[in-house]
Amino acid sequence: MSSDKLSLSVLIEDDQVFEEEYVSKQKLKVILNKAKAKLNIDLEDRTLRREDGTPLEDLTQTIEETGIRDGETLRLFEKVKDKPDRDKGFA
Image (cartoon, rainbow, N blue to C red; front, side, top):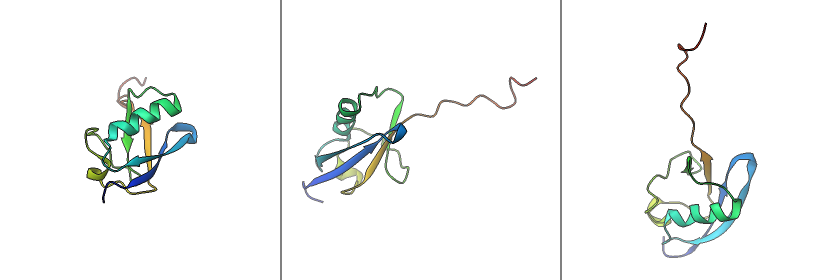
């Protein structure tokens, strides 16, 4: 992949989505910053994942380094809260 432009979509809850063009040399943090601005969301307690569910945790990586493909839809969902222990709290 060269420094070509890619068209990526970012999906959040309630099927809210936006599409934007990125250069493959841009860092993942740029995607998050644009998502925050376009979707008016708080990024705290959210995780960025690829279409297949693979987490993208190192936001300093470039789009190219992660292997994200043109046309891919990334998911930016709220992190799953810890579930209470099933054995506790029941009478």
